[in-house]
Length: 190
Image (cartoon, rainbow, N blue to C red; front, side, top):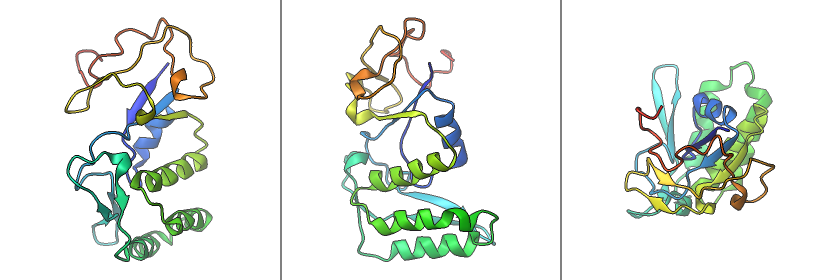
């Protein structure tokens, strides 16, 4: 079984969806500290001349978890994002087929950044027919977190994977349950 984890960013790149598609279970790491000027609330789009940043303004205090970050609607950022995307991608082959779905997401005015990001991610997963089971780290029983959040401990269950309906049902089969408390980015392990 392949369990992957990643933070839900704003309009993630195609490789992010390949990671989800290649997983049996994908965990959205939503209970880590928000990173200012990171990918949580911004991304770049290609323009005719260069790259352009699209940033979702947020109200964030130092140390606030990603799943608690509120979107700031005091500026006209939605209009700017929509216009920038339309201007730079409206001539793309499938733009008309998908654009209204994204416009609807923008118009919903989500309170939390994570909800906006997940709306885009879930819609793209739907378009790509990705049916990977998704969970949120905030709903799991994390027993330990390191400061850099590149490793953590999950509860270890010795049953085989079945149809997950609740976060408590995240199981590891005997064969897959090697050292789940390892550093996820340890080159020696991989």
